[in-house]
Length: 175
View 1 (cartoon, rainbow, N blue to C red):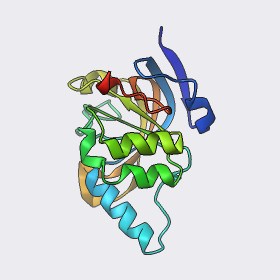
View 2: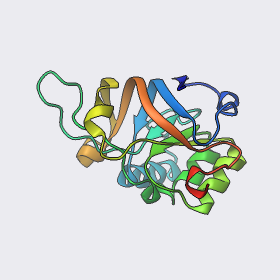
View 3: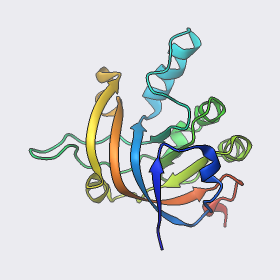
View 4: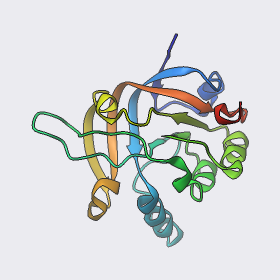
């Protein structure tokens, strides 16, 4: 049975989730990949506010394809998460609730998830067209020049994912 989650919510709610569980996510999530992470943290280090509210945020590692007529977004399959491993511990420390991507995470990221009470969800690679059906609204937030890697705010309904690393550090990929 799939658990239904509504984002945003506090990290205390994440403690109820366990590696291997299927979830359906509804609510607001943000997109960002490596180039957006680099720019976001460089600007933050210079004293600029982050372009998204990071506290309890969920970031989806995706570079969606352009929307076809009548769609809000094109295929939106997950990007390999290891590319964001250099940035994830810092964002978790800043209050980010978690991430959605595909593939295993580094020991440093798993340790940060455990230390800061975060979570990592895996989305199904190769299912971009199916996942895009869960995305009901898209808003460009920052870095339009990065095109598909720009930061976007997504409103999702029943976005399918699996808990890959839970707040206790249990790692589906290590099981």
